[in-house]
Length: 336
Image 1 (cartoon, rainbow, N blue to C red):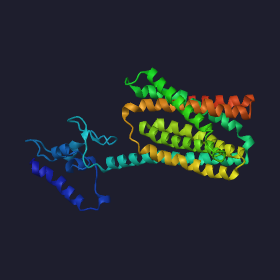
Image 2 (cartoon, one colour):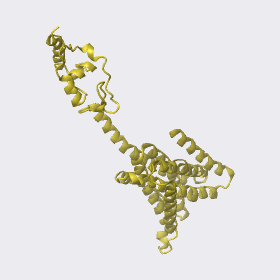
Image 3 (tube, rainbow, N blue to C red):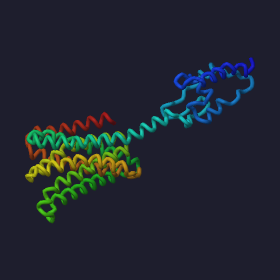
Image 4 (spheres, helix red, strand yellow):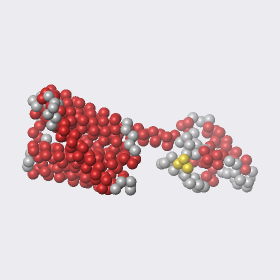
């Protein structure tokens, strides 16, 4: 059989198919192999080359060819290793969706943190005497994130670049630095008395801004780390809203409580946007996770636990905190 005669029916069918609308064109494997669609330039050119002497190229001969690997945008051919495909709309679409998702997820979590803060503040305004167990559970969750996720994640990200003792030192820096800022701002005697009423809510608002930045930076490190940091932020942002309103109400200022609650609620979203705009060098990812672990240790052990126990020193508050820690242990174990 003549080679040109054997190729003629297939070429005529391909020409007829090109006259059809896009939604009616055949896009099978052998059609793409003849026309080079969805394949790299190297293998598209190889498919279009003339066959060797004595070889009859029929559509049935192409059925044994391994299908392209579409999961990673590669052309997996049987005559060589996978190579990047050119002009692959599906791969470009997946990449675009992935980039948008990586930006959209932290913004959604920042919005959820805003709603969590507002919910905590509204609960404090209406049911201030019934939220002690929520505060205890929140304290346990924050401590669990620091101990069961952030510190192990920092050691994993170190990958030989940092000694584990150095990462523990970074955690101590985060704890000590946050403690210094927190206690210095709370005892600023040089401020006028009428300004001192707004000092503690302002500190909590700055804390919420840092929480949002932590979400944005954590999503740059790893999606799972971003989810877990966001979960911790969501849980203790409820307590931030409660504390913001409680501190203002202690100063007999309900108007200030509502104003600071709105500012505190807007801070996480702004922090997420700032965190996403910061480019983090890979060598600094592990130290940053260590610093976050130290900050969360201080928030859980030195702020949330004492406040929840001071409001209700009964055993149920302690059990709620332990339940929060166990919850995070289970969540991180499943995630790993």
